[in-house]
Amino acid sequence: MSSQDSEGQQCPLAVGVETSQSASDGETDCEVITVTIGATVPTGFENTAAEEVQEKIGADATISKDRGRIYFQITTDKLSQVHHLRSVDNLFVVVEEYDNYQFKDSKEETLEDLQKLASKLPWTNALKVWKLNTSLKKKRGPHRRPQAKKDDVETDTMETVTAEIEKLQLEPTTGQGVGEAGSPDLENSPLGEQQEVEGQEPVPKVLKFRVTCSRAGDKHSFSSNEAARDFGGAVQDFFLWKADMTKFDIEVLLNIHNVEVVIGIALTEESLHRRNITHFGPTTLRSTLCYGMLRLSKPQASDVILDPMCGTGAIPLEGAIEWQQAFYLAGDNNDMAVSRTVNNICHIQKKRLDKSSTPGLPIDTVQWDLCHLPMRTSSVDIIITDMPFGKRMGSRKNNWDLYPPCLREMARVSRPGSGKAVILTQDKKCFQKAISRMGGLWRKHHTVWVNVGGLHAGVFLLKRTAGIFGQTPEDVREPLEEESVQITTPLHSIDDLLAGSVP
Image (tube, rainbow, N blue to C red):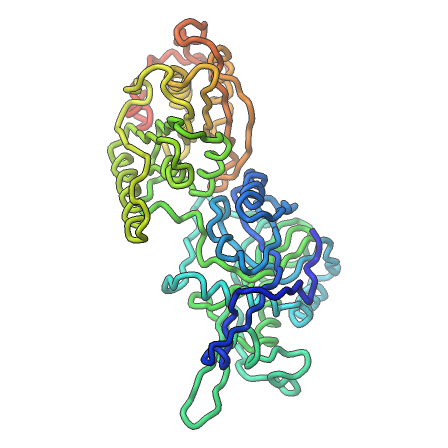
């Protein structure tokens, strides 16, 4: 990862950057600049995100050493396209990157260096992009940050802390007037908004900001809280901005991963993965993770794509929006899950109708028992689903009864020789044991390791063999053995298994 040039690459083109006075005369500052965009993506699907960036924007993405991040360069006339990427969670514009930042041995010296760094960074282009981004996005009301789930507990080596900056200073310090060397000229800055007071000269609007630090590594002498506090205080002194932890205009990001340091400005207020779902269930998947699973299956025109345990419908809904040439069937044994899926589909259809686009989606919803799907044999091209982890839904013990008949029924409806299955599960031992007993029906082709709510899970790409269902040894229903204990409990309905009512 190379450091961004402090001057930026500039070229004349047709993106209007709003100015304070000349806009009234019909003149705009038509300047397009090249900047580096950073994006957080589901861990494990960095290559998938890089492929999408190349496909839709034509930019080569670099995968960060810190899993779950990619970087790519764009010109600002393509900024709106970046927000339409389906594989990214959050976006930010890079102010500066350091591949090998030299941290001092003592905490005091390191924090002092971070304070000095704030006034040395090339902020200008990043602030221009932030302003252009603000003019492009819709006003969404107060900034919202989803609360962390109980499973998202971070250790001392991976901290994400937003530090409140105290001792606000809204006036220039002595010897550091507005517009002087070493201090940003707010009146002529790319932020450019003015506040007029009767009888007085227009003064620049004081922007509100906060600093969020994300740190990974066990060899740092400081905490995320301390880094955000000291770096944020220096940013406040340099720009004379006002700190506000909830109604901020600008969020400055300080990302530290071992010796790699990236400073950026956020371009998204909340994660883009929340785009489809309004009715959430206990284990709703992020839409960005659903996109990665779908892209792994490579849907083709006229494919029949099935999610037999759809939950809230996140997977088939994402597919129906992005790959509309296929048909999606979402089903679940739980009536509440089916209801949530129907409501989420209706929400997206209404949004599309309000935007005067085609409201219909190639998707339908059914309530069923996964072990007895009401579908013809060899009628499905792709199966994509999130199987119970045995944590929030069901239990690990019940998974040993649930997985084999589920995979067997999936093999029945899947097309021999060409059918595929993309399955997400955290119960890797049970899943792999079940697959090993079905060598005549399924072959494991590829695995992507992902982080789901703090849990290490796998996305398994399976290929359906050419074996005819009913004519392979794997069609004989045999219970699995968990370690040395053989389970002799007869098969039960999916409702009983997931409810945990099986003795």
